[in-house]
Amino acid sequence: MQRFAGVDYFDIESLLNEDEKMVRNSVREFVDVEIIPIIEKHYRENSFPMHIVPKLGELGLFGITLPQKYGCAEMNNVAYGLVMQELERGDSGVRSFVSVQSSLVMYPIFTFGSDEQKDYWLPKLASGEKIGCFGLTEPDFGSNPGGMVTRAEKVSGGYKLNGAKMWITNGTLADVAVVWAKLDGEIHGFLVEKGMPGFSAPEMKGKHSLKASVTSELIFQDVVIPEKNILPGSKGLKSPLMCLNQARYGIAWGVVGSMMECYNTALNYAKSRVQFGKPIAAYQMTQEKLVYMLNEITKSQLLNLQLGRLKDLGKVKHTQISMAKRNNCEKALEVARMSREILGANGILDEYPVMRHSANLESVKTYEGTHEMHTLIIGEDITGFSAFE
Image 1 (tube, rainbow, N blue to C red):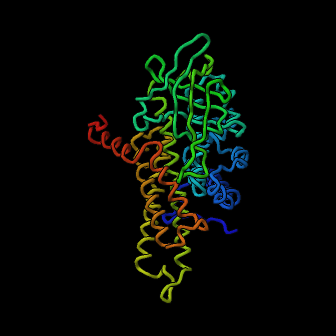
Image 2: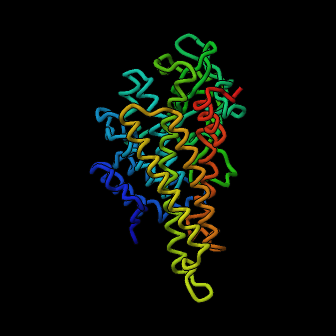
Image 3: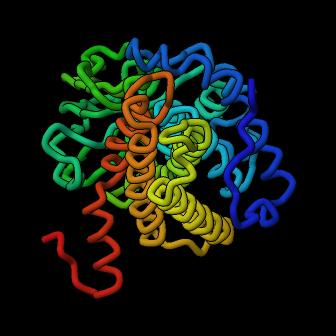
């Protein structure tokens, strides 16, 4: 099997430290060996490759930035971004699995949880022994999470939860759900465990995108949660939005992996596909597309690297994360579609990865804040006027 050599037109390699390169290279090899050969089969069968979960844990990819005392790798945010990049080169569904486990489950438990919650859940989630999901989006409230109708009511010994969540990655697989609900009108986080009476997580079917990922509904019917399962440090809409910022950061990096895979596929194809006596790579129109793709990949890489450095310095703004997520998702989708054009009719075959990436990116561009929502987030920041209301 030929190993992926990466796409690096501006010698970004020279800006990475040895730990960052080591992590990236180990995940790159993992994707080449463990994911690329099997992912089309899982995509075709609408299934997630569960056998890779312990291996992801062994590599230390879950909660990679969290402290070693919880069994985590305690790496920096650039290393985390590079992990997301390489995983999404394999498939958006695999990156989503790790992103949810890390940014939307382990992060809120670490940030808002009690010592007891952290000591119990984080090591198990880090190893992959336990799987988590994140319940914020509702059937009628996506871009406006503050409008949620899921409610928690104080009862003897704990809280009673009623409501529903939708579009939940890993929901059916999860041992624990980080669920956001209104308690006395204020948003709090709760840990809802698999098997609690009244809690169900049916899988959503019929997707044309993220087919190698499990997407679910979460349904709560008088689910009684013990007192110890509220996240004591969570309060208000700011708490789940902090989690979303972690996820958006990972997405900004992840889609660069899909861009690299699509570009690399199109470049190799164009150099070997002969029409009218010469490879199509020799024609100006094909070269224009390839250069556009490389240009957008390079800009996205540089955007991500500076974003990661700012995050590691504690200086990053959520609006900067929005800019990277917005730009990189849009350009990744363009790159995937352009790659499909270069491949012509062959581009729709699952012998090549571009149509799968293109379909996946339709979802990735939408989740964790649509393109339009991120536009308005940045717009409010630069003008001082909110266009949301």
